[in-house]
Amino acid sequence: MSKNDDIRRELGSNYGKLVKPRNKDMSGQAVYERINPDEAVREMKEEGGHTIDPRTGERVGEGIAVAAGGYEERHRTETYSKQHLASYLNSPNVLSALTKTNHHIGGWDEKGLAYLDVSKVFSDTSDGRRSARGSAKREAQEAIFDLSTYTTEYNPHHPTNIATGHKLAEGEGEKWRLSDAKVGSNKEPVVERQSDGQQGWMFAETIKRPDKYPTNEHRDPTVYMRY
Image (cartoon, rainbow, N blue to C red; front, side, top):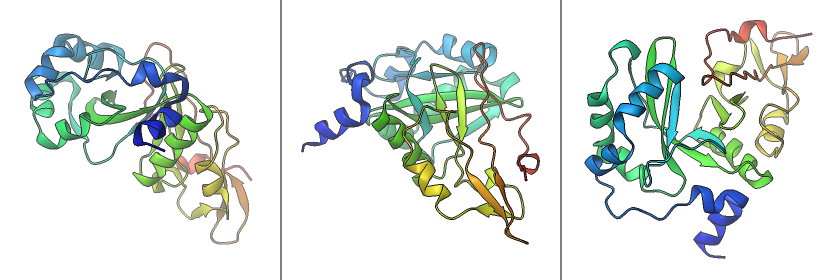
């Protein structure tokens, strides 16, 4: 099976939507001009974020997004500007990542900070959702995000998602990684208290905000436990 066949299988029905013809010019300046930087800054400040295809400049509104890992940059939202975006897109490491299939320019606003990152977008199919969860585990990412429903599902393998003094119950992490369920529809992974082995749910919080990307401002793992 060819690499292209692997990509087609992973992206499923979204193959034609997410795999666009590659623009020959993937320089930082070309990508910057292609994505409409004024609109990108406005989206960050007024809509809570964006996911942009660097090859076409199109905004991606469907699929499952997961940060690629190692490309995050943050600035104060109130002072975030086109200059920050231009500098980010001219980073050789970022440009190299953006040339890869299904890699996009991700951005979100959280607690007064504007985050830029490289986001991988998988199809909302059984294979795509399973691949997204596997990627989140491999890249040690906190969550996956459904771009069409604005639903966040938190990675149970990430330490910030487990309350202090608890650990995942045996087999729960692997069950999550292999799941092909819709984002946010999984039964919460089971965790156990290390002091006595008592078990409860780790709430993989789902936030639905059609007007904005979700934030973590109300999330506190210490109150997720239910015994």
